[in-house]
Structure formats: C-alpha cells, structure tokens
Length: 421
Image 1 (cartoon, rainbow, N blue to C red):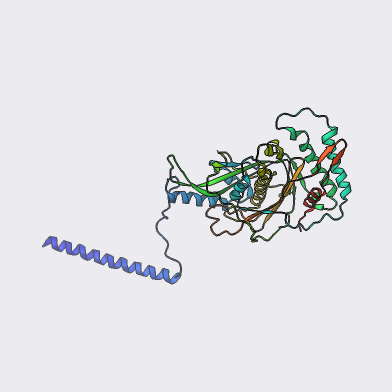
Image 2 (cartoon, rainbow, N blue to C red; image 1 turned 180 degrees about the vertical axis):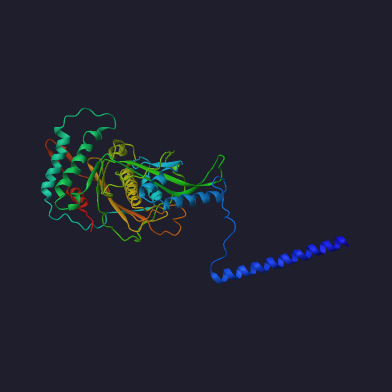
C-alpha cells in the first residue's frame, strides 16, 4: 500500500507539472503570436549544416555557397579577384594561337560564342580621311622593314621577328597618331606593347573517371594566358553593336568529348584575371587588339601540309579566344562574374595578321553566366563577328609595293575611328 500511495503521489505531481508547463507554454505561444503572427518562434538550437571538410554532396554544396558568399561580400574589385585567385584547382589552359584542327569550333563551345561571318555596321565612317596619304604612309613602313633594314638569316620559325613584328608595331602607332584628330578618344588612349591578358572561368561539368574520387562531379575550369602583340585601351566603353538580349543567327557547336581530345592539357596555378593594366588604371576598357600569327600557322605552311581548309581557322580561334578573355576581364574589373551577370554588353575589336594577310573581328560579351547552375535559364549568347583573311599587298618588288589593297586599309581605319557614343 505504501508503494501504491507513493506511486500515486508521483503520478499526480507529474500530471500537475505537465499541466502547469503546458499552460505556461500556451500562454507564451499566445503572447508571441499576438506580437508578430507572421514570424515563427525563435529556435533554441543552432541550425544543422553540413561539414566543410566532409566528402558528401551536401558538404560540397555548402563549400560552394560559402565561396559565393565570400565573393559577394568582397568590398572591392581587388578583393574579389583575390578570392578568385586563391582557389587552386586543375584547369585546362586555352592557347588562343593553336594549330589544332577546327579549334575555332571548340573555342565557341568553351566560351558560349556564336560566330557570325562579316562585320557589324560601324557608325563611324572613314570620312575626312586622306586615303592617299595613309596609303603612302603604310607603303613607307612596309619598305622600311622589307628593304632598308639590314637583317641576318632568321632562326627557324622566327622570321616574324624581323619584318612583320616591327611593321605591325609601327603601323598601329602611325595610324593612331594620324587619326587622333578625327577620333579624340585615341588621344586619351593607352597603348600596351607585348602585354599579357588573362582570364579564368568555369564551363560545364565532368564525372571523375578514376581514382579515389571516382564518380564525383567536378566543374570544368579554363584559363587563358594571352600574349598578344599590342593593344589600345580607352577610358570609356565602346558602344554596343546589338542589344544585350539580341538573338544572333547561328548555333553554338556542341562538343560531346572532353577538351583533352583537342588536345588541351591541365595545369594548376593561380587563377589570373588581367586586362593588361591594374584595376586603378583609368583606361579600363578595351578598344582594339593587334595579334601576330606565328610562322607555324602561316597559310603557305598549312597548304604545304595538305590542309588548305584550315587556313583561316587560326585567325578565327585567335579572335574568339583573345577577345573573350579581354572583354571578360573588363567585365570582372567592373564587379560582374558568373553569379552576378553583366547588365550591359562589353565590346572590343581585334586585328589578326601575319604581316601580309589581315583578318578583322568584333566581339560583344553578353553573358558571364557560364557555369551549369547559372546557365540553366540563360538565353544570352556571346557574339563574334569576323572576316576571312585578306592580303594587304601582293608583293614588294624593288622600291614598289605591288597590288596594295585599299579595302584592308579602310577597314583598319574604321576600326580605329570607332568611338563611344
């Protein structure tokens, strides 16, 4: 009986305690609901999140979210670029000047670029230009490098260092100086000689085929380290060729194999993003690049190797890769990146030459959202306009330049006369 009475008292106390506790909880809940009916009651425990060091899918997503948060919270552009640079992973190194077969189609896929033959309509025409004077100037530069300079026999594949390289340098300087009176933006431009342009981005995903991480999904990373001949930078942005959401004719080639088949190789080093100058430089927008095709990719050699259909492929690949890297770096200098896409297009131009043949390219960057997550509902495409290579002259005989092509010179003048609105 004593045990039964004790058990009865304990049961009665517990019931009273539950009743009292339940009553207090009901009163508190009613008070909270009356204070703010839309806000849930605060949690008494910290949220349960995945570990940052685990190998699980949830841990990988949390690391990615933390990286995105660090980039978003970076107070300056320099800090954003520093956060991008310290995430070291294996990445494919893209060479703009390559002798790979059909490399331009691969580069279109890597950069989400549509190639459109021809050039967009430039607002600036070559009016008020003394074409005869500029033709005489270009002919003098050709004769200077071809005839009056005493040269030794060049080393193998280094003939461009004696004639085409100095000619292209003097051509850019001479035309920019003569046309500065017609285009005031050239007077405030900055010229870079032998600069380096770098860009890092992520495009696509791949399943790890072997190793202790077999079966896991990794993003495909790319890096361009472009070493061009010379370039012009300006303090104002060039006007867009087409609206930001313009749907360009043509499709982006679909490549169903890994870039290793191009071939392309992986390396691991700092992720570089650089337009040729630091962020604080006032000339932070691109105007025109000048690229020099190496002797290995000259048309005579490709025809001799039995691949005449690949004569213009190095020009297109060079124009697409170099201009994508340059405009992409300019956009990141303004604070845009893959998770914060551009709100205005970025435009630049390029001239690709081997000293005699010239090809012209215009590029408009419409999107940086190239990752799998950011590209799901993204209908924008980058656009590259380009021409086939045309000769500036036919031959040099004695002190005379035979078959000078005014069309090439006029297109070069139109490029340099292009200005912001």
